Image (tube, rainbow, N blue to C red):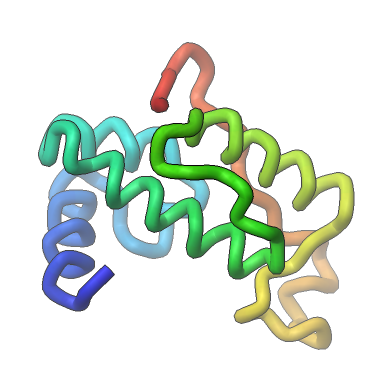
Length: 114
């Protein structure tokens, strides 16, 4: 995403109580807010976010814009937990890792994004 799009998205999320630092742990809430704010265009933002997440965890992006993004988010969560994956941007000797692995929070029950 370009800088201006990112700033607009961060602004909308912050106004709704999700600061940029909480996006990874409130992914489902983020998707819901983006859908309310941008309608069908939100799917593009969510897809690009998913692609970036997969790349951060060194996983192949094997899905398209039309695939179920919820299923692929669940798959990534499972791989992160099962394989003890750490994002590329976090160095292995980071002190935050000594207290446990970085995980993606599970989905909000009952919420569906496509």
